[in-house]
Length: 452
Image (cartoon, rainbow, N blue to C red; front, side, top):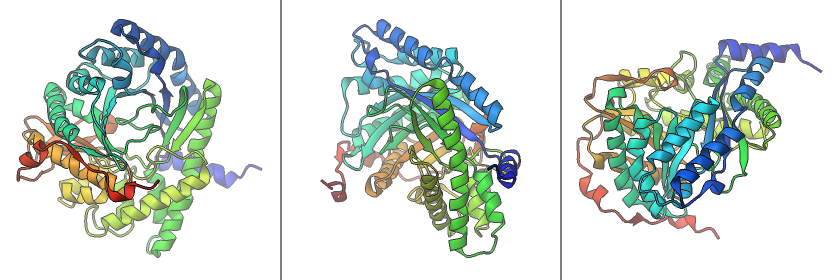
């Protein structure tokens, strides 16, 4: 029986509280596109992507129109290209990035993830080539995103890769300096990367995934904020229960869209990622949810505890709504993409160190943070190492997406536009990490990783 109150509630969530499906992401395996001839491999890649994803955007638009639920992005993720391309004799993988960009444009998707390498325990030939290709690849493509996994709880942290990624991030920023160093915004460094993440820039199609699959990422910070306004002043157990019930409703919307997209595209439904993904729009902020719990500004004492409650309650509500919850699933805290977080940074309520503390309890990590363009490579590497250590020790996914903005310093701002928003340039430590970053080697896995 149709409940009119539930229909009205859903309409309000969409129209007034910014509920949306943030992305429908089709994952495609490219393992059968390997070839010793790079040109043949790339042609196989283009043909397969355009065949499988031919109707992805059209189906997304049909569902959006029929159900009235905004679907913001239609995206693709593919097998890490370092795995696919290393069968070839190519010494640069920039041409692979170009063909991915061409295929993404041909099918009309917003972004494609998977120009990636998994190096948590060491480099292969393909890994080395791909990582060295990242700066140029991201500077000559529009839709391609890149990720590198440098650590896991089982393997420890590859400090050679950590050292290299500080340099790669700076080079990527420099090659895109005429576009506010935006290339670095398309590059993320992971520990414990997951194989079914639908969100960018870190999405790739893992080796354990099916041939083709549909993953959906939902959002809805505004819906959670609105629900908490109705229990203002109540005890925290009431707050947690309210968030849990709201996350259930949000996830059910995602489950509906995912099932329908999978059916129409005739591919398996993978997972719903129920992460609260903010945007720069007013009323769509994770930071404002935390402030609704009683904080004067996001970043003040109590912020980490509030975020821990939010993240846990979102997961509890989501797993009751779908048996296929996956990806990252929790709360994102990207500085440039969250109106409340931008304000907190502007007024000095939050800094890099507090953000690092918050990443111990949230979905991902240091995300979309603009830093001075003259930040040393070694400092960026050390920040990556710190964040990776949080993920490895706590057996959770962590990531770093820093944008060193060439020519700008603390007090300046950078405008990325669209969902990427804008950001104040945040201060980093003035003290050197050079000798630490240059050591290389591997930080061993923590003792609790040995569970067999």
